Length: 420
Image 1 (tube, rainbow, N blue to C red):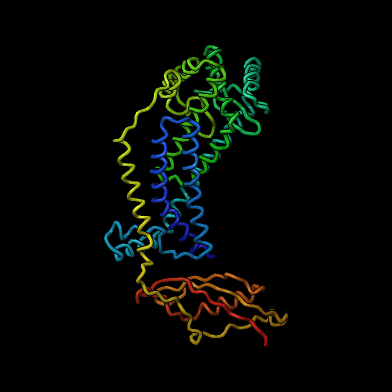
Image 2 (cartoon, rainbow, N blue to C red):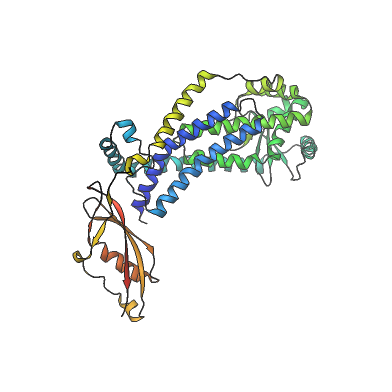
């Protein structure tokens, strides 16, 4: 596998995720709409599943492309004929995209690296605050009591930090709750205790690990709005679950609502690598705690989602029509062995009297030239494999055809090294 081929395959995977992510986002939105009055845990599971699928689908597509040698110029869902009006226009679009894939992948890599650096710096800041900021013995004792009530066996440390607007939780194996100094000195103790109960709910559910996975997915698939929307829904439902657990633990939902209303007066924290008590829509959370009403169905909001979902599903249904119609006549590429020299036996392999059969694949362009090659099954000796690959790559190939039209395709070739 050469680097240009890997870049080409990765580029098509990133492009395919444009429609894949849109489809996942639409289906997730429809499920959340149907479950609008279900428990927050159910909606959270749906949102997490949608976000995880956003990672697994392109990852599986990339693995399949790399392992099966998928055509680098073909998208998994050729929407070109559906949107542009014909196969000719679709081929033109594919050629244009193929020629710019390296630039697309390069830009994606730079942006992903910048977001990854931002994530690492955030983790370093959290770690530094957890190690070097001061504690508070009185509030540590109250936090320990609350943690025992939640059934948390791990030790949870409390650190008082300047410059925060809300308590945040970080760490999984050794969790720490960072509490703003302004809240310790200025918020009534019973309200701050309610916020600490909210943070311990995150610790109890190991939400920090899920949040890290979220950040990784956001970093890799930053270019798709559906990823950010689904990730936002995950955070909203996670805060609702933590609110419910904290309210049941302290036995006073209105006390937690009052504590959240005090937080609304402060500046929001933007650190998404930690669990913050002011996450999500604070006013929505306050109303939900004080008056949990049933939500009515908004059909006007659902119609665009249904329309987009139907369009994408129709495109999926028409995928086989692009290249594998029932009446299509195809021929595979063939090597013309009389056009090239016989592979030379490597001297070292000849001295050791090595033999074997190597299975190769060659990417044959529409003009019969070889663009790429790879070893699918080794003969047992690397020098024999390479000698066969280099020699056969110089051969002329008869290109594959579809209905008489030459087309790029992979050609399997076996070569037997024998001393008899």
